Image (spheres, rainbow, N blue to C red):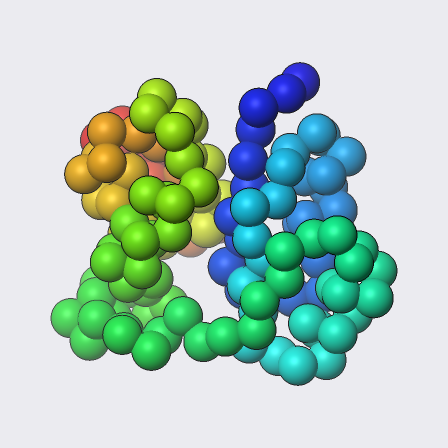
Length: 128
């Protein structure tokens, strides 16, 4: 399998990233706020593009009314525009309120998502 790219927000210590690496995904970026987790990622996989930062800097307060951990759609769009090519598939395993879906649709990308919370899971699998 080739040509798959991962962008991971809230990367933690890299468990999901390791699984994606095993499945031949290329990591465009791993973003994590916790300094210790960032240090672990950089130590374990020096070649991975790991960034320390808080994606909530431009947090959309309205989105929080929809989902307690909503990702700002503008941030998703900014990132997807830089790592995706036309026709790419965006897979968001933490789709929640669908911010990545909004961004993918705006950029003309294919999108699929899921969420552990049944309230959001059904909406997440509806194509844009």
